[in-house]
Image (cartoon, rainbow, N blue to C red; front, side, top):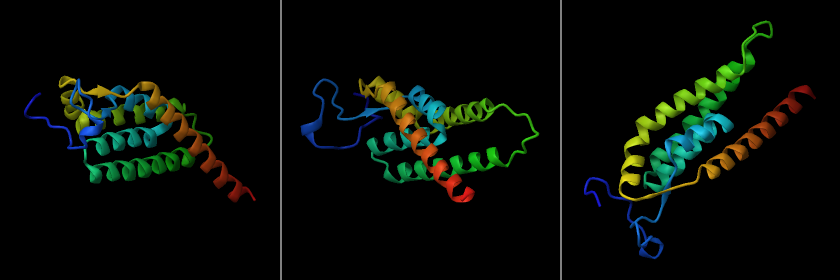
Length: 152
C-alpha cells in the first residue's frame, strides 16, 4: 500500500482481506450521474457519503448543507424566470452537472484515485442512480406539498 494514503481506521471484522479496505467510494462519474438525474442535492449526498467513509464528518455535513442550499437557490432561480423568457430546462441540468463534477474532482479526486490505485473497491453507479431517483422523488414530493399549500 502507498504510505501517503491511509484509509480510516476501522474494525478488523469488516476489512476485506484482499484489499485491506472495509469501505467503497463512489467515483466522480457516479457523482455526475447522481447530479444529472437527482440535482445537486443527490450529487452532494454522494459526496457526503464518500466523506463519511473517509472519516471526515465535518466535510460530509458541509457537503449536505451546501448541496441543499444550492438546490434551493437553483429552484428559486428557475421559478423566478418570467414565463415569456424561452429558456430550455436542460441548461439548468448541464450547469449543475458541470459544476458538481468540477467540485467533486477538486474536493475528492485525489482521495478517490488513491483509493482505487491502492486496490480499494468502488460503489456501483447503479447505487448512485438509485440514490438520485430517491432524491428526485423526495424533491418532487416536497415541491408538490409546497404548491398545494400556496394554491389552497
